Image (tube, rainbow, N blue to C red; front, side, top):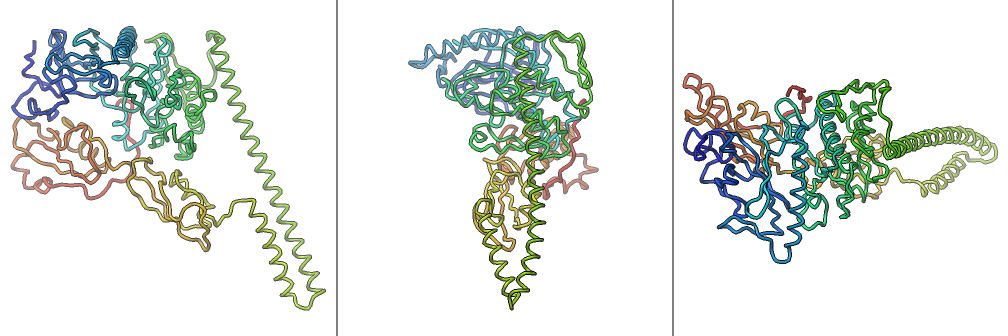
Length: 599
């Protein structure tokens, strides 16, 4: 059995030296901790050692843990809704605050039911299994098997901000399969996001952070945790009308983020002004069928949204551009390859509920096709009318010119009179249409869309200024000068302020990775860095010992990250002395994602 005193509370690795851990940089005994949660070195259930706090929300807290009996790492989750309970710092027990006894009791029952359901899904490969559930400190704990993973959001960042459909298809369809199986067992996640999807070294996706429903809608009895851009609009309504369609919205938003490199606008702002651009407009290389499937999954209306995950998967596979893909059905462990050209003949008949969903989907697609057809007809009619009007105007103008030249002494005065009449007519027509010299509303548009619009470039000079902005995603216009409606002529200049994204970002864990990989990661995040070489035999040459600031801390774009690694040999120290103060002076160019299925 491992001696608990020899373990790092940050990563549960064996300590091989005094001071900061050589793997994660955690300094045992010197790191501060939140007294509202369990202190490191706490023992639970006579076998589990509590490490550092990993994450917390209005429902629970997650700790790095270690099973002293099995000698393996685990993740410990504690029901700890701090707005309903308080902790006795001596006994570590949680006690409901006055008036919240009933609410905490109901929440504990829901949490225990959730854990029991997850224990029954241990055979689903895309879910981190629960090893044990027990009560202690007047609350409930769940023990999860530890898997070495990183959040999907971090993976996307390391892949350059976006991933090609061909490269992420296998992992994404595996994720859909996992969610589908969860739905078939009556559980809705309602918190799917790039932070709650974990990916291991082989590219396998795991769905984590299952929570009670109260955490996933606004206005509940606990502090809700909603992921903007990925939460469906019904989660903001406060009525908790969850369903499979709620997770479909989140999954569609995740695919939008992976393929375009842009997080979708949050549902609340879209309800005020829906400025969601189809993925194919942001990146023409995205197949149109994939783009349409994503947009249908992101519909604000539950009635018009893709109703189920299986339907979303079918839409994504229903294209010659997607070829074939592995998508497991109800029978686990048996890969069912769905061909895109013809359906399986011996497929089980749909029940009435599925038939109604399928009929709604077919009606919606037919309605969409009809709208597109009407738009094409209207455009053709408009072009025909415009052409006839031009021809008529030219002919009539020639006739009038000839007539005036024969009946008036000054043809020049007559022409001037004709032009003035034409101007009056055109001004009347313009009163019912938009003025092309009036500055449009650019705010909320993606800059690529604005600069590629020929109507804009015909009347205005667009000057682009990139600035950090926490409210608008990268590449979106958040301000303009002059404002909408200003009359400008002679190709006046409009200044567009384009978001560079948030100025602050969370520093990823780089400890244990190669120095080169750490540098590439920081450069991709537009962070400056400096490599510091330390004489310490416990460190490994070429690998990152730790960073300052530490992992998960918020840093600004202009902050300098210190990378600590083992000092190189004396023979090469002279050639690398300049590297000791190496810092990023230029930003990397955007490169194509090199993410592969085998990591």
